[in-house]
Length: 166
Image (cartoon, rainbow, N blue to C red; front, side):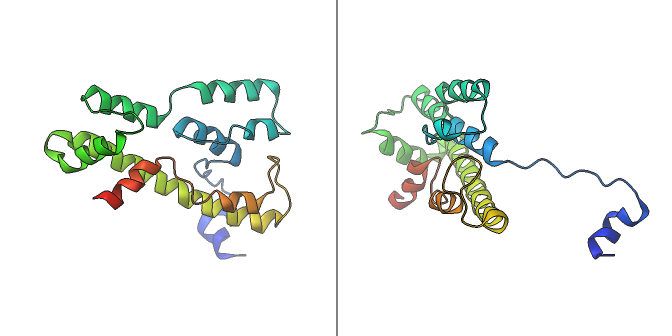
């Protein structure tokens, strides 16, 4: 009997509480679209997705992202959010925490989520490599090499780039 069995109570036939659910590749792809980016061709490669699931995911991708919501919050404060002006607005938020602290804290929370997601991606790649090696995955990608190539992606790249300007 292994240590895990003793600690969990399995040796006595007791039910072990289930672990909290963890994101899957499928739910992660959907979350990526909601947050700020996502490979739209991903939907076309899903061999195992029903037409209803693909339609639902397309609807999700058409909805505003968290980045869109953050830009809306900046705009409501009178800060410009056009492509050429957004970095100046982010700098203004970073430099004037007295009146923009809530926007700064929200940006920090978005980065915290980005970091947690990056850690999940790395663990997911390692799990895929352990389970199927370099074979193609069930989502239609090249498997671990594809996943490893996406580990450095950020949902909020301008918030990361802002650090270099401070």
